[in-house]
Length: 592
Image (tube, rainbow, N blue to C red; front, side, top):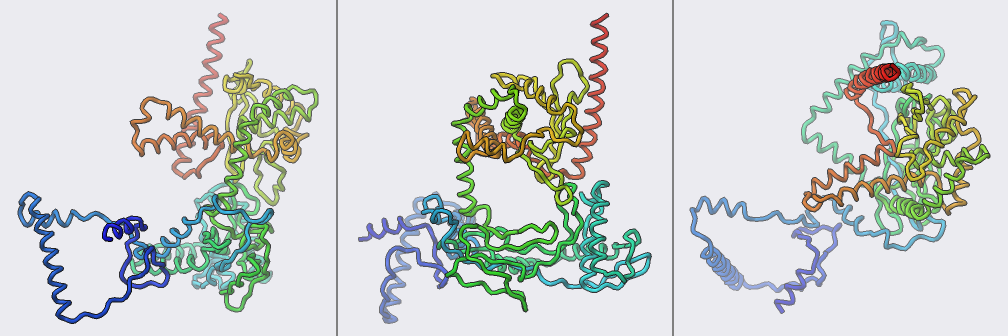
């Protein structure tokens, strides 16, 4: 019987349970609770305690006889260092760790999918967390050298501008600074009203408020550990309340449960609306989406109520509202590690895997059409080559008065292409591509279409170069390179080749293929088996870096890095000039 008990205990999960009761936790022991023992007499309990002490002393003596005799002090030290760290028990974990355990138990890839066309069957959540109301600080800005009284709403708007870094990417850039200041002052004047004393932005002085904000930063950094813990507890309380949703009977983490606070809109790159004031979002502007059987969450802003309640299982969002800058709908959705995102990624990579089986057929198709007599067909084939080989996004038309002027393959203009950028002449087949891609990330690469990389194995890089020259001929710099092509035409053509294929699947395929090829190179090397786990991580990061280069994924450049890059850029220009001069000298010497 004792042996059976021991084996049963080994099969149980490794959770060390505490003696204190907790209603939130379940008992993970598989066997039922033992029956209550009858009270024993004091003499019986004394004898039991004595026998227990005897057993303990006996086992201690047996263990000590096996060890080499040492000094008592050393023995104490060894005894203190001997116990190993035990795994945290379920009741020793904090609340967020317990929730994480519960979420990991759900394996979405093994679960049944909801009915066709639906994202979920049941969904329940607590709504969105709103920022606290503005607390006026009373510090006055100056206008034309004199202090100005402002209402709390006006003071809040002035504080938004005062909080901006004068040397940052918006006010520190000569191109973006006037856009930011003009947009801000237009909205600021609308808040102030026509009869307000403030009329000219150049006479405004926000430095007193900036100095106050800097002082507050120092104060916040100097808080005690107790205050820091209190702030953390407040954040955790909001997270436990709004940060999780119940979807089809299992927990899911919510991504952006905090409502966007009001402030000065920053945007990315040279966004035409940067500096405009983002208004505070009220609960009346928010629409909730949950199942009909779920309880509608309480609105925690006093005197307000939710704008609308929807029961739409065909969409993934939990809350929706419209922001005032671009009039676009914003959504509160589940986090990146949710089952929704996992299913989306699975679908994306399955498409890329199917493309792997059709890539030869697709490449054969567009290579054949690179020399087509029809200009539309030739443009379509050239765009497919560019998307496949250079991993460009498809691009699309944009209203540059409403959004930043970002570009993709189909929206390339003549001004984005520079033929023979180094003026080498001759049979040079280089084109410098320079434009702002997604999120205003600069794409600047010189492509040598005559190199082996683009010509070997019938790569047809030289033909693509000739096509670009043909498409740009007799056009203005602001004209589209692919004047007869749109993303819709391109994607419709791709769907005829493979079901569900679109231009963006090529990026997923090429990124995955590049990562796989780079890792295979490392694994096939002789010293792969001798590498430690840390060294293998380095090799993986190196492979991942090649993918980032292919897809033009970049980090934001710091000021120090920008200065270094400027210096290197100047050196590079000098070397290019020297290269041209040396090439001319070589030609003169060759010609005698």
